Amino acid sequence: MIELDTIDRRILAIMQEDCTVPIAELAQRVGLSQTPCWKRLKRLQDSRVITRRVALVDRDALDLSLVVFVSVKTGRHDDAWLEAFGKGAASLPEVVEFYRLSGETDYLLKVVVKDIAAYDRFYKRLISTAPLTDVSSSFAMEQIKFTTSLPIHAV
Image (cartoon, rainbow, N blue to C red):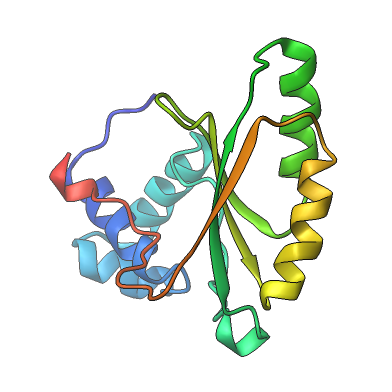
């Protein structure tokens, strides 16, 4: 864990919005010359504060407009079951987020597919990964907010 100062946080905020910003512009925006800015950026990458640089893709442009939140309950919590379900569910490309939860639901998956028929095909593959007690699907009606940016200034 590295200590982040104000400049590091500004770099992160800018990079979260657009990781293609040229180093000269990034340096100017955070008040550094290029070499110290590049060194800070490299330190943030080497220490895994910045884990990846990716392109965000429009789901609708790829005809993947259906978002489904899948709640899973299980009666088993042993290592063998978790290994089978964890690996099985995580390997399904339609699963874009996957969490183990406390409370009523054991696992929550965010799934992106083309339509109900595609979801049904996905569902059949999901339930074959391991024995499940209950699987409940909630279909997103509208996306009100979406961001990949973390609230780093609030820290």
